[in-house]
Image (cartoon, rainbow, N blue to C red; front, side, top):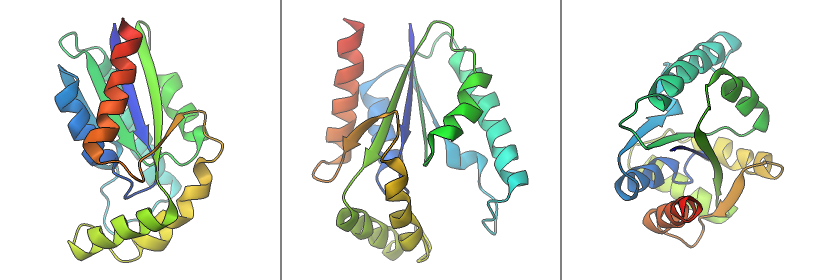
Length: 170
């Protein structure tokens, strides 16, 4: 049975890095990042672009879910509101699929430090810091399993997720 693993959380929390580690731990796997369907410059999250991104995501996710040689599909995106899952999951054929949802979070100080490091390295624009911090409260009511990444390396977070998924298979 295939496992579909969704990692979500605020920007800068480590979703992409954890996903890459997870691909090394769980194989054969495929990684899709929601941001790939959202690369529009200048960034303008209007309804037209949101609908376009969701349409592309559901198409790509559903296509990968049905590749027989892939056992683990890993998807990451911000997804700050569980209502976004309602715009994605109903459009996927999840027959025979184990769905796992993990919200990666960290404390405010750690998130600010991670985002500042990304800005310093040229990976993000300076305005992302306030935006990223403002997303933290949105995850309080998520139905996903929350993983606190504050004191963990990305590899340790990936190992925790892999252990949970592999344990469920036994």
